Amino acid sequence: MKGGASGFLAGRAVWASVVGAQDPQTMLRDVSVPRLQRLAEIVDEGIAQR
Image 1 (cartoon, rainbow, N blue to C red):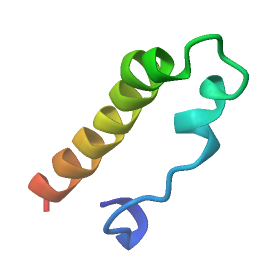
Image 2: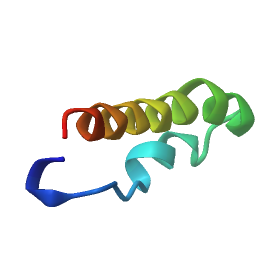
Image 3: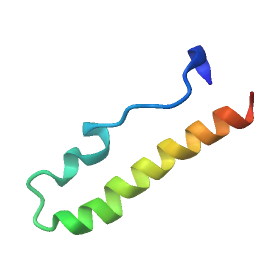
């Protein structure tokens, strides 16, 4: 991966939209999970290119 990284840290970028949401469970499922899945895909793609 770029710069020798082998993973990532994820925080507010993944879950911030859930804070104060009317339905946090739905927001986690519909927004946060796909964001985290996309980050994992990016890592997988980077590892595959090594």
